[in-house]
Image (cartoon, rainbow, N blue to C red; front, side):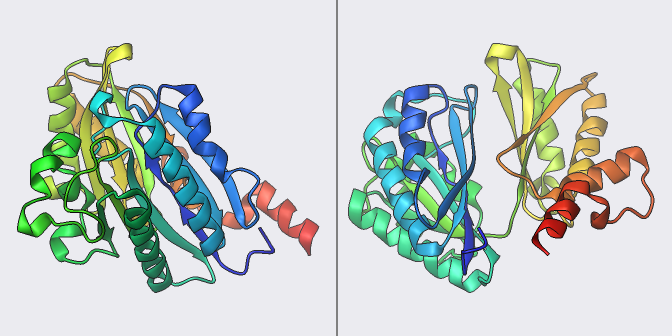
Length: 305
């Protein structure tokens, strides 16, 4: 990591969370590559989704990503895909996050390079979103994805939804993909002890910003069929302003009206340390805590001094 002059994080989401062989094929291009480090990958069978987190130099990250996308296009057919999570592509979304010696403008430029390369190489329509969006109505991923894979067959022909790169026809098996640059976010899900997805969806609508809830919260209700429970699935797009514990407690408040309780929660992918420290401070009532009180980072710093 210390040898990287610039570090960008990329968190591609793939629409495959059940077939272990396919998952490993998709992840393999991120392994043992100069200039790229595979930090984490996790799959969810209910969501039928794979989330990969990599960091590295911009160009090696781009090359490994394009290789992995090629595998995903080969092994995923959305005509036969079902899952709780909304999706419009075999590679559903590809966000870039500047980490070290890199400005957001450079991440935007990288996202555009990758978007064009995806379209040129695999003939997949590409939408730019978040900071890379070509128009205000394309900033929000949920608006782009609305209608999902099935609805995109017609939606893509509407003048306001022509892709930024690639053909103006949905790829027959791989669909479409959103590529963009953004700040770090927390993907955080809260599980509820009810199988009624209408309740989870109603709570999600109260919690998310568009429904009058928390400013930097996107949320939706999902059914976890195998567990006979439901989930409020969230992206906290600025955890410094909308903390994890605040979203958690608001869900608890809204769930009470339905006689429903929280039975667990999960973090998807990686999460900034500060976001979890804030939760510890809140729930434990810790006063005047400093990040300098974390043991492992202090040891790591001491070793490298």
